[in-house]
Amino acid sequence: MTGTSIAKAAGIWAGGLLLGLGLPYLPNLTSPRLTSFIGDFPIPDYPFAFPFFKNHTNLNTTSAPETPFVCDTSHTYRTELVSLEPLIIYIHDLITPAEITSLLETAEPKFAPSQVTKHGRQQQTSDRTSSSAGLPRDDPTVMCVLNRTRTFLGTMLRDGWDEMGPPQLVRYSSGQRFNVHHDWFDSPQWAPDGSPRKWNRVASFFAILEDTCTGGETHFPFAKPISSSSPLGEVMWQGAVTEEKQEAKPLWRKHEDGGLAFRPVAGNAIFWVNLHANGTGDPRTNHAGLPLETGRKTAMNIWPRQYYTYD
Ligand SMILES: *[C@@H]1O[C@H](CO)[C@@H](O)[C@H](O)[C@H]1NC(C)=O
Ligand SMILES: *[C@@H]1O[C@H](CO)[C@@H](O)[C@H](O)[C@H]1NC(C)=O
Ligand SMILES: *[C@@H]1O[C@H](CO)[C@@H](O)[C@H](O)[C@H]1NC(C)=O
Ligand SMILES: *[C@@H]1O[C@H](CO)[C@@H](O)[C@H](O)[C@H]1NC(C)=O
Image (tube, rainbow, N blue to C red; front, top):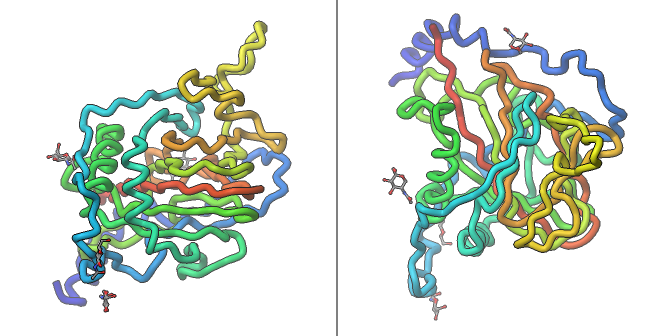
């Protein structure tokens, strides 16, 4: 397609696209006592220059693991509803230990300082001090995890129209954090294939791969538990204490500044829906990566892309 024909097509489509675009993002939320800064920027897909891909010339095939990765399509995970508006679902055991090992190995040489998109440009900022690594979508483990998360989404994605988007790993060490932000873009993004379509991050999976840390909770200041504590004093709304992992602490808790804070637990993931049905961003999905006190936290970001229609 030539530049002019793209521009022409974009013009024709623009009427329909406008609906979903460019709305002011901060509505009148009854703001909890937020001490952290609220950023009006999303996380980028690409920690490095676009496009990222596996540099095959770097691959030493003789050092590949002896047994090739086999996707366990029968792998089961367990889900718990956390919040209805916005929709937040806690997923136990989404990523297997073998997948974690493989993903970390693939990403290890690629970590670089995380960037954010601010005022339409990618840049490093003191609001986000972690490192990120893009993951190749043709990697068997990445494909396996993307398949599983695609299945989880069901009818949210329309095959042949929407897509899973490129995943990335993000790593935090002592003192590092990501101030309050949202994952959806203020302005939807052009399709990478050059077609006159725009997309936004309809939902997010945030899966923990390494949790050898203190601190580093993921805090959603506007999230509310579905039900309040019962008269019996149950703490189920804080997340079940799972026996198999011998966890002494609940998986999530009410945060003192409002909302809910999720403790990083390797293999588990938080899923939430970023966009309203009309395609605009939901500011109640704002969240922060609270500073790590000690150790290291590594997580996988998966951002399914929903393309806007123009009817
Ligand atoms: C891929 O890696 C090789 C070896 O490190 C390097 O020489 C080459 O420039 C890289 N190619 C690209 C496109 O980055
Ligand atoms: C590839 O990896 C193997 C096993 O780790 C090593 O023995 C070999 O020297 C490596 N080759 C190159 C070209 O780096
Ligand atoms: C992903 O799912 C597709 C469709 O079900 C299947 O054909 C493919 O083998 C799966 N890939 C992996 C890596 O599991
Ligand atoms: C989109 O939906 C949200 C939630 O229902 C609403 O607050 C917002 O005003 C809507 N925006 C448009 C342009 O319809």
